[in-house]
Length: 191
Picture (cartoon, rainbow, N blue to C red):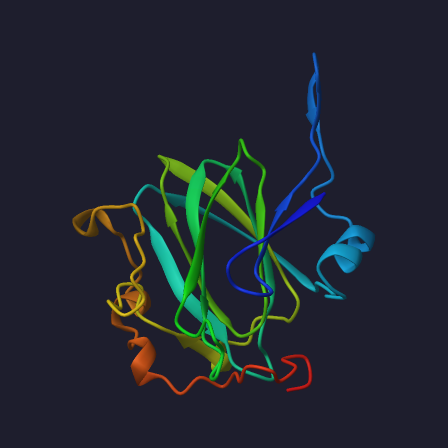
């Protein structure tokens, strides 16, 4: 796999090596050895999958310590705009984001470390979205910021009148209104 650095340290794009022939294609979607070498010693404990239709926007979510989560996300079918927002206090990239189109065709993956809010918008008619987490989900540790917070400047590539949100995602505070539990320079695995 190829590791592509983004403008925010720790958030990386992973491109698998795809082997194609007359039968179709093959690729390793995950190799712990290669991930440890190229990204870090992250141990994933849970896999999740969702299916959504065009206009669905999920996010921007994070889990508070001690249940913080790093995620490795990918699309099996369809296309999303996947977004990671740096919410680490004191970070030189605090409030900045990385946005990457993930599709069933490009097979790209995005690694979002602990200390980031995560969300995605569905760009295709429907999508099957999968992700690995390095900590189990804990409902009492949910945190989130508003998907449309103007200080974030995220272009979700969907007209705002076509965005479909859950009730919960329609009422999150802006970034300035949360007390982020993450601090730049602290090891999020020590929390």
